Amino acid sequence: MAMDNKGWNASQLRNCDLQFDEIPRLHHNDPKVDELMSENKPVVVLGSNLAKSAEKWDLDYLERHMGESDFTVFQSKSHKFKYYDDKKVTSGDGFVPPTKKLDMKLPEFIKRLRAWKKGEDRLYLQQGLNNTVGPAIVHDFLNFDWNFCTGKQSKHNWGSLTSNLMLIGMEGNVTPCHYDEQENLFAQVHGFKRCILFPPDQFECLYPHPVHHPHDRQSMVDFDRPDYNKFPKFRQAKGFETVVGPGEVLYIPMYWWHHVESLMQGSYTVSVNFWYKARGALW
Image (cartoon, rainbow, N blue to C red; front, side, top):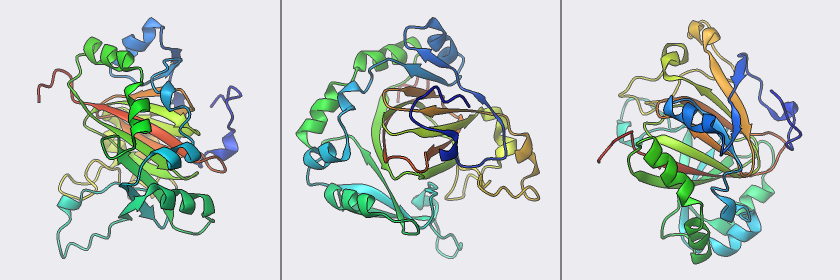
């Protein structure tokens, strides 16, 4: 993958057996951006200023302005933060949640993030941007380039905006391969994330968990150590990748599988998701 002198290098990427095509990286005024989006294909949008008002969101600023509320933090004994639906967990099924969900004030989270040493449990803050955050963060949020968002929403006939999720992760954190049932404008604010995407037609190569399983919508394949005896078609999976940095926006189409890693030996990462309902959805 081309580095383009963007502040990271290939040694910061986790090893993966697969080879990927690159996701196109285009200026927001390039008409090909909307062509790709209309075809439900991913694209990295450059120069949009979507979350420019958040470019000052470093740890010091967030600690001063996020407020005194408790925020949602996930704790993992490994670098993986695999989502699970706790409503699908039933007693006696033997399921062991891979992460622990905590309520934590931001100063405590930042203290633990800064003091973290290799081998210790990792943390990942995932908090909706709502009225629980401080007024300065709300002000920054209101000053996002909403014209960019509503323009894409209107042009591509998306449904309503459902949520904005702020993610603050430690270097090396990984969200394993999964898909969402919404359109996503993924805005990178601080640090760098590698995003590996697969189109929906690759599901047979990615071996999703059964729909009744707590890991519904998640791949069963461990990308670090794929078991080709159990998952032989994974070798044939055809995907795309990119590394997104501050100020860049990745369009992740609905139902596209995505595997996201904060680069190793790098900085903490801050990202904001803009999730929209399906095309034409009225609910």
